[in-house]
Structure formats: structure tokens, C-alpha cells
Length: 193
Length: 235
Ligand code: SF4
Ligand code: SF4
Ligand code: SF4
Ligand code: FES
Image (tube, rainbow over all chains, first blue to last red; front, side, top):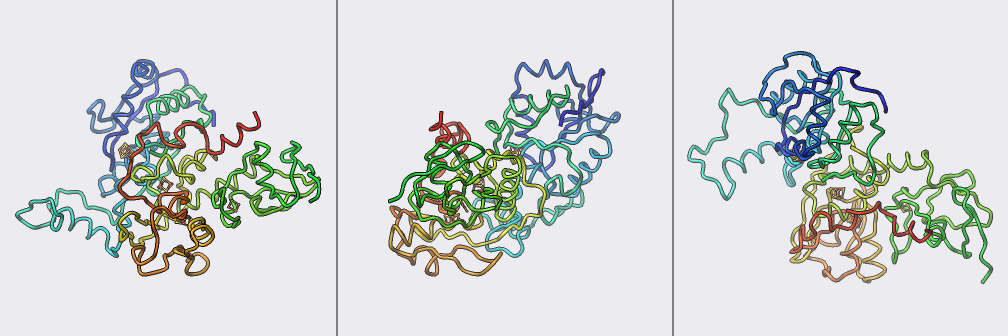
């Protein structure tokens, strides 16, 4: 795996947080002063970091945090696949569902989604919900039956494991991909947490 | 007792005593063979097959196969490790392995084996997502068998060391799993000091009241790949 993602010009990068906690985006900032090196290699398109909400042009790289828990996530992920040459799943949520996927297999439950919503809005011991209803406003994106890893929705080109991945792993992987020197992860630094 | 003899692992001469398994001789020589069900102090089971090597051209589990004079063993090769990585990956698909929320993370042999074998993400197969009840009935021990890899260590430890039989297998084939000898763990004679409660390689047998005690950075596998202690013997 040593292809160069970009040649001379700066790579255009888009990022998004789907069903994630934003920790993976915070981890991008953990690369500290190497951000300056990275900014020399890339321009950001749509991203929470630029606050641009839609693609302004085709991008070289899309970085996805979080899996898909609702239909809006799926729509956004499909948009990313359509508009980016290379998609990177960043962190355990994007790779395999992560913490939100805890709702996929709630113990004792044949209907995990119902049980999850009922505990969150009706029966949980620490809540005060005077309507005693599960929110169902039509503007809310429809929840999926379970949380899906990104690769079950679209093809993913690279996965950067971790929750969140360390700044070192993020920087080394991105810098490696951008300069054509990425040769896989150092086993000693692999982490799933 | 007959004399020690030599055989070769990846071309390196290794001395073995008669009756030693390939893995025992390798350990003594400072050569690490990946493993999950085998552990010091318990009888060999030969269940997980992560320790599979090619010996004399055949695939055998090195934790049960006796070493023989002149045997040529293939261990640390790309082909062997690829099969091991696939086995480990399938275990991740078979159970609910959400490492970020698991109390065993950082001290887990399955996770550490995935790191050693360079598994970055288990995303090739569908997740089975088992939905087995958590057994928190016992005052000191909780069981989450959704993470069980059926290594049988708890069964062997309880039978052979504790003399109890708290754990056993039920079901067959893909449905075979580990169960306790009673309605739940509180109905058995399990106690925290049992050997069986300290041998689980994954986050299935959980000791209560000490969750997440070890900070990240101080956990067993935070520094060095699993098996490095054995490999350092040869340096
Ligand atoms: S992988 Fe961890 S840090 Fe990243 S979004 Fe998911 S929960 Fe947050
Ligand atoms: S048992 Fe090990 S592999 Fe499974 S979730 Fe826990 S730390 Fe991860
Ligand atoms: S409970 Fe733990 S020790 Fe027992 S079989 Fe399952 S993984 Fe192995
Ligand atoms: S360690 Fe040999 S089969 Fe499991």
C-alpha cells in the first residue's frame, strides 16, 4: 500500500462526524504543532473544522468519524463516497459501530431499539419527561434498526483504529498516505481503545 | 528417561525433552508461538487453533503436538500468521467485542493477539451479535458470555485446579458455549479466589468492585506485543 494520494497540488480533505462523539475530531487536533505540516499538505473542504456544510468541489480524501445510526447518517455517508476519491474510517465507531452499537445487542431484549428508546425517554431511573413520549417530530432523522459500521453502507478504503486514535497514529497515517509512504500500521501502536 | 533431542522451528535448532510439546520446547527456547486457549498451569486443550504450525508438512496445534527429533516446524511466516489473523478476526465477529467499553481492554489476550497479528479492524464478515444474558448474580463476579471465545480455560481450571466444575460446555458445533453448573453463578460454589476466576483471556469473567482500575498506559499489553516476555528469553 504505497500509492500516492496526491501529486503536486494540495490534497482536498472533507471530514464529518456521523454517529460519533466528536472525540475523533478532537483527536485530529491532538497532532499538535504537526497541524502546520498537515496544513501544508491539505486544504479542508466541508468539515466541522471549517464549518462548511456542503461539498464545494470534488475531494481527494473524506474522513468519516462515527457509524450510521439514522437515515441522515446514511445519506451523508453516500454523499461522501460520491464526492471523495478515498474514504477513511477514523476510529472504532466508524469502523465497527463503536459505543453507539451497544444498542444493537441489548441483553434480554428481542427488540433492542424499542428497549433503548424506552429506557432513554420513559422508564430510565434518572429522567424527567413530562410528555412520557418518545420524540417523534418529523424533522428528526429516522433511526435505523441498528447502528451500522461505515463499510456496511459504502466501500471504505482505509481504517484508522482507536477510540480515539492517538494523534501520532492519525498524523503518521495521513502524512504517509499523502506522501505515498504509508506502509500499514506499526503493530506496537495499534489500539482499539 | 531418554535424552534431549533437537528439531527446528523456522530453521532455528531447538532442544526438546521427550514428551514436550512443540510449544513447550519453543517457549523454553525463547520462540513465541501465538496461542489463546493454552496457558501455563492448565492442561492443554488444543481448541482455539491459533497455535497451528506446519510440522513435517502437516498443520498441527503446537500446544498439543509432541516435538520429535528432526521435525521441521514452520511458525512465524506470513502464511501461518495470516491463518491466525483470520481465526482471531472471526472471534471478533462471533462475540460482542466493543473494546472501548470493555473492562478487559488493555489486559485482554484476544485484543493483544489482534495487535500482534496486525488485525486493524474486523470488518470482513457479518457480526453475529449474540444477545446472551449478563449474569451478575454473584456478589464478587459477573459473567458476560457475549465476549466468551470458548477457550475452555475456566472449565479446566475449575475442574482440575479448584476441583469444582463450576463451568462446562453446553450445545454442539457453532452453538457450543460455556455455561455455569446451576441457574446462575450465585447458585454454584464459585468464589473469587478460585483459579477459574483468574484465567479468562477476555472480558467474560469479570471481577466486581475493581472495574477500570488500571489506567491506560499501565495495563498489561500497553507496552510490548503479547509474547514479548517469551521472545526476550532468546535475546
Ligand atoms: S471512536 Fe471513540 S472517540 Fe471516536 S467518535 Fe467513537 S466514541 Fe468518540
Ligand atoms: S474481551 Fe478483549 S477483544 Fe473483546 S471487547 Fe474486551 S478487550 Fe476487546
Ligand atoms: S469464560 Fe473466559 S475462560 Fe471461560 S471459556 Fe469463555 S473465554 Fe475462556
Ligand atoms: S493454543 Fe493451541 S489450540 Fe489453542
